[in-house]
Each structure stands twice: as C-alpha cells, then as structure tokens.
Image 1 (cartoon, one colour):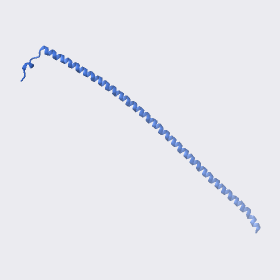
Image 2 (cartoon, one colour):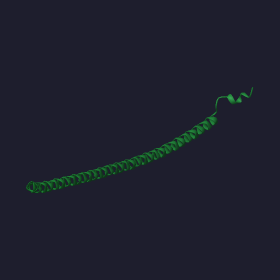
Image 3 (cartoon, helix red, strand yellow):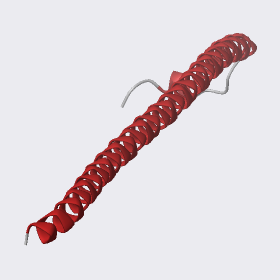
Image 4 (cartoon, helix red, strand yellow):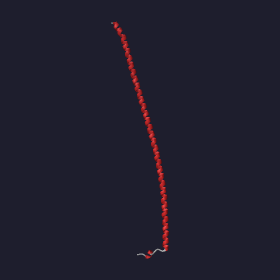
Length: 130
C-alpha cells in the first residue's frame, strides 16, 4: 500500500501546523457559539415580544368580554323595564275594565232603583184604580 512516509513521527513543523489548525477550529467554534448566543437572544426577544403581544391581546379580549357583559346586563335591565311597563299597563287596563264593570253595575243598580221607584209609584195608583 501507499508510502510509509506519512506515518513517521510528527515533526515540529507539522506540530505547529496542527496547533494553528486547532486555534482556527477553536476560533470557529467560539464564533459559532457567539452566533448561536446571539440567535438565542433574538429568539428570546421575539418570544418575549410574542408573549407581550399575546398578553395584550388577552387583555383586549378580556376588556371586550367585560363590555359585552355590560351590554348584556343593560339589555336585560331594559327588558325587565319593558316587562315592568307592560305589566303596569296590563294592570292599568285591568283596573279600567273593572271600573267600567263597576260603573255598568252602578248604572244597572240605579236603573233598577228607578224602575222600583216607578213601580212603587205606579203601584198605589193602580190600587187606587181598582
């Protein structure tokens, strides 16, 4: 197989080359790590931003929910006021009806009294006739 020269003990020169290469690798590694750290920081910032936005959105939704609840309460109150008004109106018309009935009864009573009086008035006269 190939030349054995490659496998001789490493000389000073080769050693220096290897050392340089190691330093270069270390530099590369450090710069990669630095980039990763920057990336991570950016990612964290973005995450924080997203979290902030999400929290803001949550607040907005919460406020909207409160507004909707207030509106619902208001509507319910208006509805109950309408019902109350309708009930009062019904009561009123019922009262009026009762009054009309009473007035009718009074008219009937006074009419029958008149008739009785007239009858009584007519009675003795008739008896006189006989």
